Image (tube, rainbow, N blue to C red; front, side):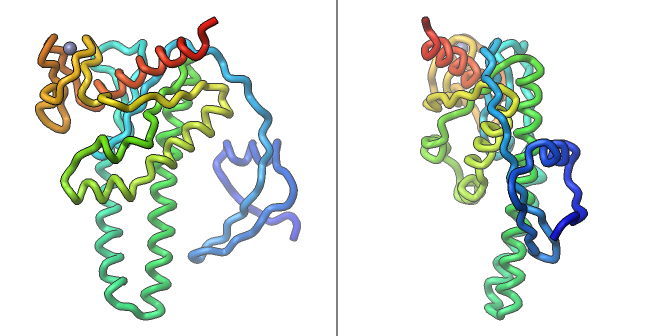
Length: 249
Ligand SMILES: [Zn+2]
């Protein structure tokens, strides 16, 4: 087939026009047609970062980003509220369909799963794009937590734990790394130990620094901040240290 009409975001259409490689696959799924094209993008050299943006991943806020240059009170939070509501609705529907066990219920179940995955990927793409665009604009690098430890670090009630496990933090990390590479933005993975309990102002580590899930209040110096913003500040400064260590002359 040739000359198949298709549409995409302006960004994707530009990429497609400039870097399309080989043949594309036409795929029919859940009543929609998708064109899967391969694009071969040139390498963009990584710029030396002027400071770092730290990204904290969580549940109430899917991602919180703040930069080393930001004043106290800064930080952009990407709320997980709408997302978690949709996920909850999907879970209820899935439970009902699973109980039915008919062929059509199974088919519908598969369709719902894919729909939910697309929804989550869409949110992840949006968050990743915003974080990378801002880092590129300000000339900063991006520091992410090394995700190996995230499930051990977060101790939560069971329903939240389910949300966390099914939420794809790895995908968000991958999307950020991929978009950053295209923009020449440096990405570092830092040690996640105590990022939520350490004071980003004085370094004091204490679990009592967290009076509740949302707040951070240092028992040593009195520094107070939204807990996720404090964690993102710690991640940002670890990015600075880690870059300095690995690029020391
Ligand atoms: Zn402190």
